[in-house]
Image 1 (tube, one colour):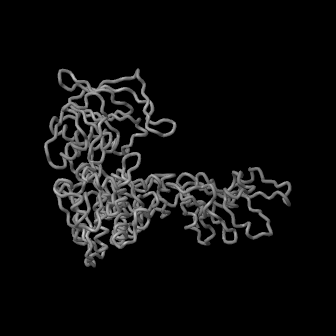
Image 2 (cartoon, rainbow, N blue to C red):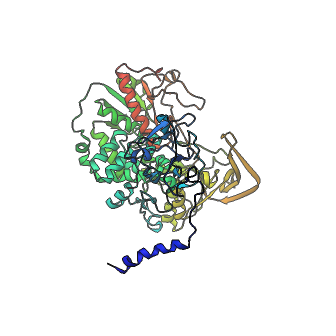
Image 3 (cartoon, rainbow, N blue to C red):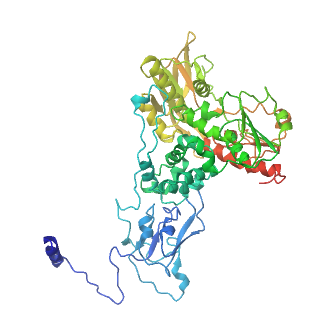
Length: 604
């Protein structure tokens, strides 16, 4: 017996000096201890209906049910927990696992009723006398979690090792890092609804945790045939609603997807995915554009046995993924890894083929059973301020395309980029690298109309641009490009005090007394891109509905009013890769229905 064992009983003597608890009316007043685990409470405004409480309950005492007045939205299932006290044992595991800390237990334990149905109730919705009782069991904070609140840090190349080259900067997870990150997932599935492709996120994360890469890879391909690409440049909106992120860091869902894709060699794809033999039919589908939506449509149509031909205007497949995203974010070998597998399914990609020039849309229509167009947004939009017609004013999309093609691009000593989105950050960081290689110094400035808190660019893009010595100065509206004796001198700006009005409409307001002048030898505009649908002849266009924004109207399967023509990707929805992938997948199902005579445009 140790000395500690001998002395421990004597610690009880400290209670001699504490005030005793006296219950004056024990027949009517019998309060529980301050942290007694009594009846449930739920802050329904904080609750997101993630279902972790339902999942952990061993007695099946909790069900998620719909509630009047609570709508389903991103990050909220619209459901709330209903507790059955015929089953509950008051273990409080539901409270301990709650990711938002909305679920607690009061210290009340007396409830008398002759109706057993009353003991099945929805805390926070069905009002109870203990709702305002602050005593009871709450998850102890901090440090009392069933999962690690902090995400596993992703390793990057240091700025000084990446700021003059286009080598990939994100290193990716090791096996140990991936499993540790996957172990943080509570498998609630809130993320699935927010993902445009509705990927099986909890399932593929579980596969990482169980080190079953083949299973995880198969789950990825059920809804996303571009996992190497998406694992690097997906906008990862799923992470913005991750339930674990309410009291910690959201899961690194994108990086876990990349981890799975990186583990499978190209030669193993067909074995893992079971696509060694696909039964073919004699139906043909033409696809215009080898971007994410076109590649996705081709992949799923090929699996159904259709003969698919993709017509691509540029020298290689990939669309804006290849010609709009720098290689340091998306290496070409990873892009080609995804594309080559799709080609291996029998998809024929004809490059350097411009519709309307090398072949007409009507000619394609005559030779195929259906057509899918996913031609993207490749035309840069201009601010149209005075001076934008100067020869030293460029479009970001054009420069990024030239960089990808290996063509020489102009690189001045002083550059100003106008724009606050990811494309603006891409061209800012690309030009910073080229400046560093050419001059040994970086002098590129990016301005945006939006203040930093509402800039559309991913936060990491802004941070990394600054790490690479670029300057990002948000909250300025371009007013005029100064030109003197034909030479570009710089950009005149004024302070933007608000971008949107009280109704959320784009209606910027400026402080006319707060102005700046940014010297520049070269200016790049990056305020968005537009579509080029000139390949659609007038007689076809006349049979297509357009909305007030000039976009083609399609039904839920992305079928246009010209029923043989399906349209998706950035020209319909986005702009981002994952929406394009989702569009292509849904359109493939629609094309299958159309060819079988099961789909009309009016079908919604």
